[in-house]
Length: 91
Image 1 (cartoon, rainbow, N blue to C red):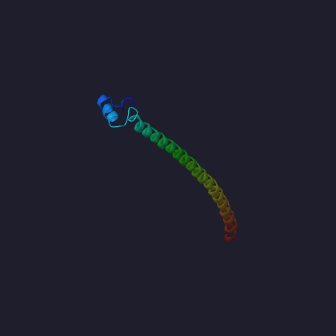
Image 2: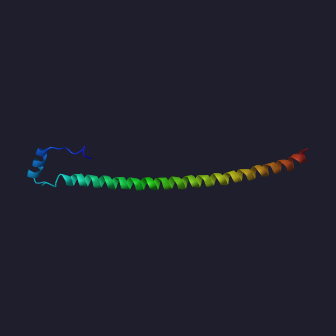
Image 3: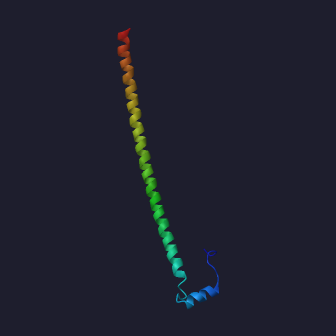
């Protein structure tokens, strides 16, 4: 972040005279960097949790599709068998 820091000796003197001291201007910068790091860390954790939940949801949907496909196959076979039984009696 070298481009973000402003090189202005008078502003440093004003801050020193106003009671911030020579290390004062860096403290808010450190705090904002710590807050940013914390925010990024929380965001990474939230994204990780979101991906985990999505993966679980997709897996659940895939299992449901497999079950429904099997039920559909069974019902088609049952329908075919019933058509064979009742189709022959009608004729």
